[in-house]
Length: 393
Ligand code: TV1
Ligand code: CA
Ligand code: ZN
Image (cartoon, rainbow, N blue to C red; front, top):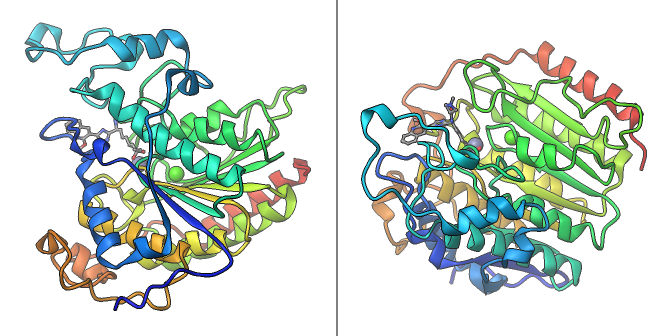
């Protein structure tokens, strides 16, 4: 009825754990794990599960998390409890241990379970690629790119991406990491700063004083010490408010095209943070579902093992649209997917309009001013092209 059938010749695996979705960061906190429920509801209503292998992911083990994170940090994360009473006024800004318990990274009930389930989905997906049981793996519950070896940061506690890429590196000589979340993928970049086996590329809003995390300038390309093989293997694409689908697609395709040609990755890991969409509560870009999805489509065309992660995304109805559309691209039913939302999708009223592709006017009322000149975008491409002279496959 939906017209969606299982494509022959390649497999897509879908990894999620409903246990993740019931967790709460706090009433006013922008990160709502419930957006995963809304996304799945749309994906299932379109009938896409019939075209994929669906797995309930297991929680990652302590040992698996320790492939990246320090045991001191994991031990603490495993034992901290939510504060029984809110902090009093004198204690608003205590020295946080491992940056845990502040407003960005609060301690909540079941925190360790939430983190290990997010990483479990990403790791299961990576393993499916390694064993060639899947060609594309999807883990919308992952993508938490800011977490460090021994520090929580920006709503992220465990870096599921790093753990998954470490798994991919057991089988693939080189992995390309691409990050289209509106924030800089600093945790993943830092984790692979000293290796030439992972190239990291982040597209993000950059304003060192006014936008989190403040890193990711065009010329931050990895420590340039003489004996660091990882030098030049971090690509940063700093952007301004209001970038459009057309500009983003041009820059993305040009940059990724050149990188794949030069670096010749064995697998691609793509973080699909949906806070780069127009109308996001925290984001500043003017991307539409089509432009965001075009990045997935472009990566898919290389026919390399591909893992898709979630990430940011703070306007749940748009997150659900983007990740549903991108799931349809993965299973290549994008030419068959109906642009009208299915009649019986649960929480249908959440979506406001019944289209998968709302116009900028429908999303925003009035679109944001675009502060990206074509000249600046050309300069960015020029810098990356020059940087790639130092990169060898
Ligand atoms: C509680 C309640 C926490 C309301 C946090 C927005 C809140 C933010 C809140 C918020 C908020 C940030 C900073 C400031 C660093 C702090 C998943 C000096 C309305 C991947 C993480 C953004 C993005 C962190 C995560 C950022 C991701 N922005 N309301 N917090 N301090 N933190 O700026 O990349 O999407 O905003
Ligand atoms: Ca990014
Ligand atoms: Zn983000």
